Image (cartoon, rainbow, N blue to C red; front, side, top):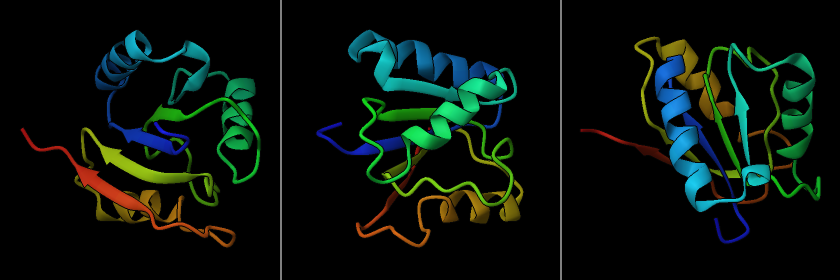
Length: 116
């Protein structure tokens, strides 16, 4: 990640778990966090703190579902968002893009849509 934080977004459990399994092959599992329906609340709270700008966390990659965070999720420590499986709901997409664009974000955020 070269010191930069990344979010991988997918809309279903299977895709989220698949991305996570591949990422932990190349990264320390402490650097890769999950944020989706099966994630315990305490782990969600940890991820929220870890991906705020200036948190000092070793976490660099968040893999999750865009609908789980709801509104108001602040992830200003992120500067790359990768859409692995997109939602057909434009409101969910727009909200997921805004998570990295909050007050306090000073870097350019790059959005990537994987198409296969």
